[in-house]
Image (tube, rainbow, N blue to C red; front, side):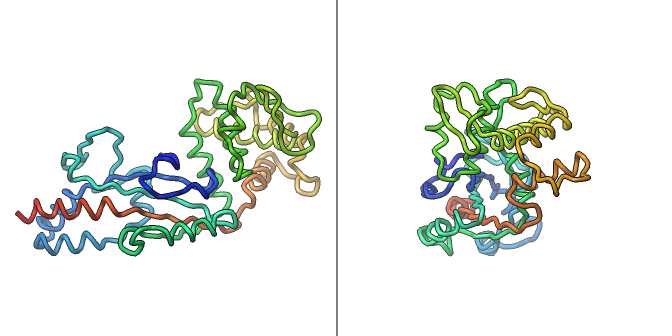
Length: 298
């Protein structure tokens, strides 16, 4: 996964860091042309026309296991895993996923208007999901960026949560030099920096423990947090003391129901609809189609 600053020439500076995900998928055009010309018996020119106007789908570009002719490879000069074609036959597809909402809609519309030759070079796909599903996707993506062998991951998860809660937060500046995160005995909400320590209000500290518990359980089966390794009962006790459960909601609920309530609250809603907007950059694809077509045509 790429950061916002790794995109080719698309300005994403108006978007909150937590609202943007950038991924890159490789497409082997040699595989495609062989399919159209050898298996479907199409002339190279016809194959070229069909490939150029192909409409991509989100699953084929973003799935964990990609099917031929799509693949991922971080090497400088990768080979196609299916036909062993060299890099000159590979097209790069950059996929920008924007989380919809009041904080991003204006910036998204401005971005689309600014894209060069939008209709030809870019494809926009709108996908509906739920806030709970989006939260779990965020957790999964976060977990794959962390080094659980280094205790600094606890601070990294705190930063990620604050950036998600406060889209305008400059996480790099706020967390520069932070060595410890503590529960504040004075704050009732929010956070404050004191030297190398960051103090969180009890509710925010509780949310941080919940994120750390969930992400470490998913990645390492650990249940690790700033308060050490916690069982579910211990976690829920801390969340209750932090005020994350309202009395009517928690009355009579079992542990898993309470955990689900806490997750839905942190996610901003359970089954409430949320939209993702995928912007697919097709420029390298269109450029490479021409060159690969030339080789097949001759």
